Image (cartoon, rainbow, N blue to C red; front, side, top):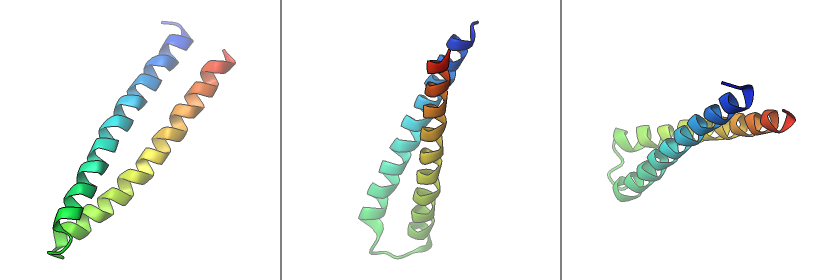
Length: 74
């Protein structure tokens, strides 16, 4: 497997992970929107998870762009 093919595969995995985590964030935000009035601990935990996963999405996005730049240099 050439280096460019390997980088393309890594970008593919990052895209998959990005899509899955994006779906989780959207689902959690929807759940929070429907349950925010209850004010129980689950709502606060979901809010913290949204923040953590959002930062993970930013990191994945940066990694993918670095891989794309690396691929461009080949």
